[in-house]
Length: 184
Image (tube, rainbow, N blue to C red; front, side, top):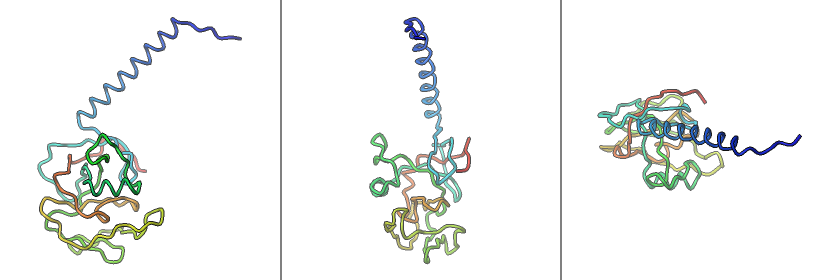
């Protein structure tokens, strides 16, 4: 049995495909404009998050969506911790993390434990080596400067403040709330 090519059928299928693609593309653009983002990294729940760019105050426990500094991005991209994206500031996609320390708070490390204001963060560890056996950056104890935050997640392989220090508040694009997520 041989199938015959039909120009009419081809045009109809092409038109339907173009309409579906256009609908999906326009919908995605509208959702992006409205502040919805998709987290695909395993350090926090995968799924759709709503970014609030009109935040007025950041508190401990808030989720933040931020652009890494050039230094953080360069190192992360070089080590394949971050994906390179030439369309984003500093060539890195924004990151989603949880705020653990605010300006004036102290952060310290003892062995592999992490402390904020001398209180250990339960289940948070600092690794000496990454998954490829390379040494992780070591930052010293410190006080969080004005207009900076200490951010991280509980994921063991998260690239966060325990390895690159604090981030400037000016790099925060917004606070984030999960909309439709699932555990990884």
